[in-house]
Length: 428
Image (cartoon, rainbow, N blue to C red):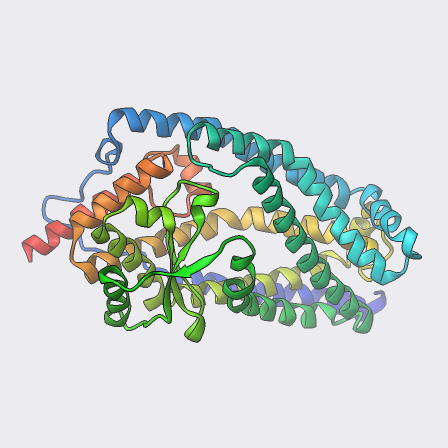
């Protein structure tokens, strides 16, 4: 890409990235619920960690978090460092060309095998830290996986990531060759489409790769959950039980899919540990996400973010000094794969605190829907306490950690919210 046309295309890519980014900001400001409850009489309830867990369990949860947080940070930094070394030096380009050489070194082999190699190298670099984190989860009784199953899960997730990423980057580089000046526009549209498609494919393709699902047997609880979904205005096709106990003792439930694929999924551990009222409360929370179209909104946000990121890459990948540092000649060079993956990693890291800020508000709105749907703040509070105790969730993490990594309100904040809701109900 050179000359006036190349400069114009580069500017256009930056302009489109800015417009899409501005649209994303508007969605993030307008859509999430920034105020959920009026201030109750006497002021809001304090978020006290002691309201969530008894002292002995609180100490254990804090100890577990203290053991796991360093591993999470080391894994994050190590993964980013490996990505930077491969993306900002000639080492990444050499790796892409080397792994394709036995098959003739063609473009397709470089893209597919090179992408897989970069993904696998990154995963291997963080594997010891992941193993340590698994040891910690075993030590605190949160993991029930044997090492064989753990390795199987690592292999399957890495393979899925490598294949999906390789195919996506293969299409990306094909567009770069076919439309050297406008590829970023076409790629942005494709990226947005892939995000949307992924939301539909995940529950029917990815989830079954890790768990088995069986329908919840007919009975009072199944009827109650199906009735909750109907009352919520979001009927589901089935209520399934996941064999989560093969891997963890943690409790969870979720609603996945759209239309004919929408179903409630309960961890088998949840059924074993929680009474029916608490199960209904956690499912009501998940149904709150459905009625507020949080998955669709998240998909829209993801599509805008992906399109904006690809348009921005159209600007960055036409910057000659950056390409020279990575040891590639142009954005069409298959050896650009490590650099593209680095840009994706940096973009994901920078967007994390914004995503989690929005996520916390969305989760709080789903909590409100659960309270409204069940009318039972007591069951909601009991459910939060049991979740925190079983999952060893720190009810009061460091503020900086919660700001950056916290996708949900803390346990103390959620219980205080339920208390505020009940006080407003009583006052009304």
